[in-house]
Amino acid sequence: MSNEKETTRVEAFSDGVFAIAITLLILEIKVPKMETAMTNSQLFSSLMNLWPSYFAFLLSFSAVLIMWINHHAFFKYLKTINTKFLYANGFLLLMVTFIPFPTAVLAEHLNSSAAIAACAFFCGSMILVSIAFNILWHATAYKRALVKDEISDALILKIRNAYWLGFLVYLIAFILTFFYALAGLILCISFWVFWIFLDYSQEGSKLKHRKN
Image 1 (spheres, rainbow, N blue to C red):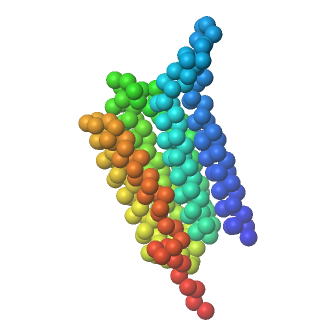
Image 2 (cartoon, rainbow, N blue to C red):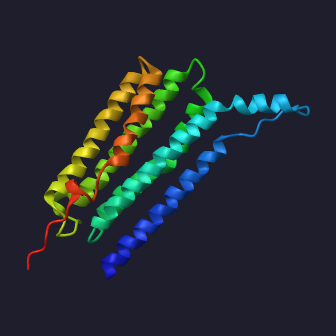
Image 3 (cartoon, one colour):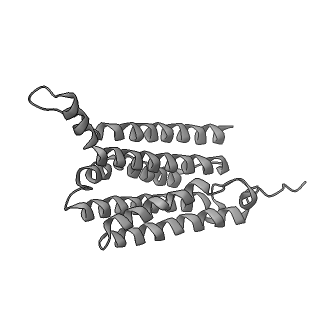
């Protein structure tokens, strides 16, 4: 029971950090202001001109949401935690709370001559997030250190390979942004579909039957 309480505490704390990070994203959308009173058409035009901010907000909201879902999914496989896991989880949370900054940069420069740097910075941030997930899973599953006994080796391998694939795709997207900024960004975003459909519990993620 003590181990279960410890994992629950860590997950609850992590959920709080994810919630704060996802809330901060909306702060990057600024209310249009003018020195004189706006007309209806001016306000409408100003709101429409904020489309890069809307795009960046939806982009990062989706990213943080998918991160949270994946983070939550493998917590149910933990039988205990240790100090190594806590530091690895802390590094992941550090990267999650960092996401609003590259979001702001992307929103500010997506529609400018600095779009390449903005897209590269955002995709580079996704590389760091991927590294953090890889470190966390390594701390969890290396030599089955923290996973429950009934978790299959096939599932452990599947998740590990998925995280390594994520790192590779984000790295390719990052490099691509220096040649075709939007293409690199689209590749980065497209891979999130993979995370949405990553199966932690169905055919490829079945638990081993306990021996009597």
